Length: 187
Image (cartoon, rainbow, N blue to C red; front, side, top):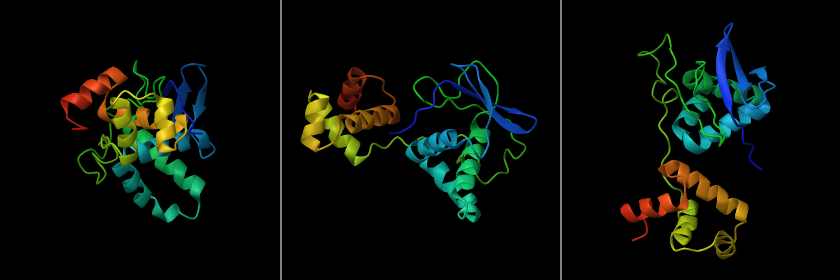
């Protein structure tokens, strides 16, 4: 089961990366042992910011011998490039969605990973699996029927719907139906 991290604000203090769980008020330093947070960030990068993930995977290739440390470094770099200012906008909200900030960087204009890792391009392409699920949803089928028809669990159906909605920027089935009709996705 995929871990969902909620209501997080990242910040830098004494040149270290910290995060505050806004639901509990607990502050934690982001370290190599922050494996749940690193895994969540890596999974989200892989799913929604694939170019950033590939670039950082290549950047830290020399750490392939130590997977946990490499994952920590990749996640930390992604966070530091996109979050880190203390403000009123949660860096990760209640639904697990990231909200990036314009983070001051001494390498702005010189970094080879600018607009790849920082300000990454969101992957808006719906996968073939998601499209099969969405087409049945568009036709008015229930999620349980979709799961049976496609030999998937209802959990997987819900994940496909959630991820696809996020990619295309809709928040409900009604929004999706309107989007699909307007963009002629299934015609």
